[in-house]
Length: 375
Image (cartoon, rainbow, N blue to C red; front, side, top):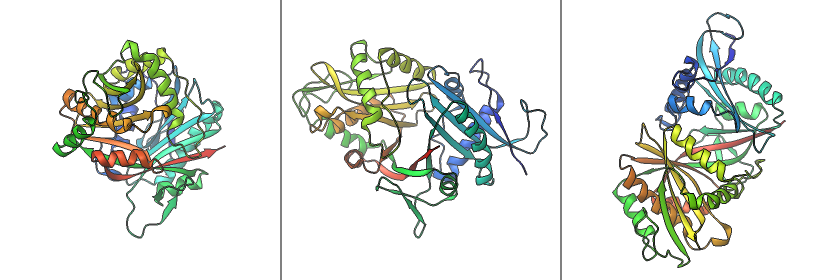
């Protein structure tokens, strides 16, 4: 049966999105439940509807693949939503780059759904002159005897599942593999975090500016939500470095240009999308030189996300990465004790950060492939 692809309208009011937007969330939920056994990784429709209206710093497009029904016109087809894709294109920097994130309903012909979605996505990328396309795809845990595709980075591999075969056939190259890990925030994990956070004198209180860390030149400071006024300039500099300092294999990506206004805008938008962000920094002479953050959906705090962690190159070798992550776990638990688990992704070649995660108690749950198409 031929599939039709339509664009989900951007809502004028995020509280009243088009029904197709909710359908894309259900497709993503069903896909993840089949793949990883839960829907922790799927944002609620309210959060997606809010972020979909933010078209000033990136062009966001939501596509649906429709089966059956009648073609009531190109602008208003009907039918069952059997697949969906998120197309995302930065507008401030990386202006030749686009992202393609497809999903399909289990039981549907995966390749046919992705073919239909890609045809429209490629048209959008052409319209916006995007020559490099990235697709970050979750792949199943590698079973015994499964065929594997190795990343060009030389670290890690993914199972050659249907999604991997489709991406390779479409011309995408597996450049990098990230390890997907989960931490259960139980008593053992919190005890491990306290041990690491207490390595330096006076650093056991992650909710306030602490005393000297493992290096007497560094102090820790944590907060919830809005970045403190005196740290915004320093955080802008660190976030710019995060965009290129993390291992990126041969994925084409240029440094993001962050400034204070963007820090403020990001804080406002995370709040509007219903996410609490817990951040810990290491300070040197009052300026942040390392940071980490955890985001938690306010409406479903049981599962959160260990996001960025960065230590400035001039301040490595003092266990700052481990210290800020440990202190941030304690700050999260103090702020939101309902959070039971955290999800995170790290490049397989980032052995240092993977070792810190293991020390904190993270356990491997799967892999994610970083696929790239140069057009």
